[in-house]
Length: 140
Image (cartoon, rainbow, N blue to C red; front, side, top):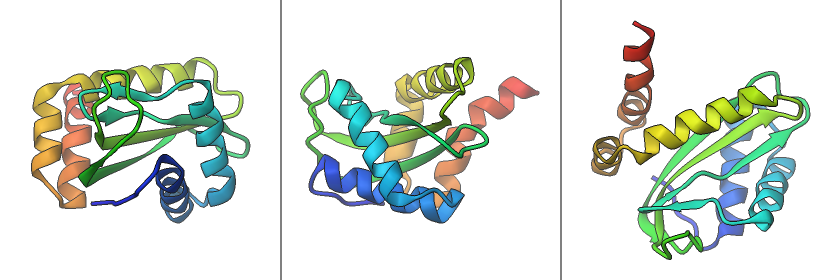
């Protein structure tokens, strides 16, 4: 469960999490997310935001998920505050791979059953299982 009082602080938090998980530079990551956000808000509605950025030095597409107890004003398309954030990071030259990953995350997060489960659980292992369950069943 995360907390942030602004998009800027959220992007800093995501940079710190990405640094711990993937060895990414937290400052560069936060700046890349902000640059993308300046092009248009990544709050897609229904309490969901999908910030994303391309970064030099990444080998593959990676992601970070956070859930807020207190929703954050995100300037989302439906003007609703955001409580579920799935940030996606792709290699600078990923092209189609980045778009496919973004589409998959978008489809997953549009599923109201998945979102309800994400909102009802705080355990990181459980959240990971919820987010990857659909992909595991498609691979089988």
